[in-house]
Length: 231
Ligand code: SF4
Image 1 (cartoon, rainbow, N blue to C red):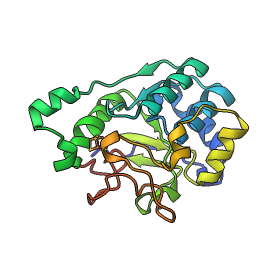
Image 2 (cartoon, protein in one colour; image 1 turned 45 degrees about the vertical axis):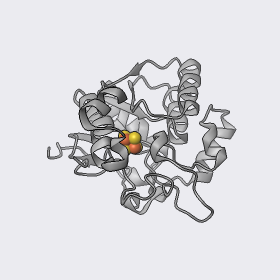
Image 3 (spheres, rainbow, N blue to C red; image 1 turned 30 degrees about the horizontal axis):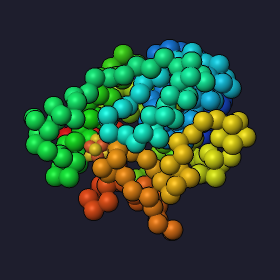
Image 4 (cartoon, helix red, strand yellow; image 1 turned 180 degrees about the vertical axis):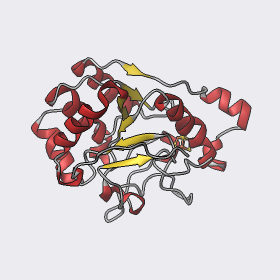
């Protein structure tokens, strides 16, 4: 685990999402990247970073190759509208994973599957960067309730910039509508949180946003936002 380098932190919690991004850009410039998995937080941050603030930072796509077709279509619409150039970390094919780990690893050991398809590729992608912009929001799950707008991510040795940390789902949706930003249509079909096809279902009324992820498994995080990153 890397320890945090010295950084003079202003009162980032009092900043707006835009102010936090501008402050982070001043600190890190293009040594900061934005990661996208094409959920609604990605839509907001892509618009805010490139459309509203005109910052010049790389975008890392975390594609497990198991996303819904609506997710890929959303990516294509955002890429086209904002002229995004994506960094795509290597990930083994699903066929290779079947051969190496046995069929449908996600059913037997989702932590290992997430480690192979998400955590390792993210480690590789973040290696050249000092800061990472993520779309985490506190209200998404109890595991995210203590997330900070800026925090040290010892797991990857980067600062995590989380501009939307205090936004609720309503505010996210309003920003998308007001700015007419392309977004994943599955959000309108009962999927507040969207991951890989085998591990995502719509939620029921009253359930947490992330209740539709890894149903039946004792798991609500893929590991990229936890300190240990699973295995
Ligand atoms: S969400 Fe499911 S399919 Fe996707 S990487 Fe994790 S365990 Fe594998």
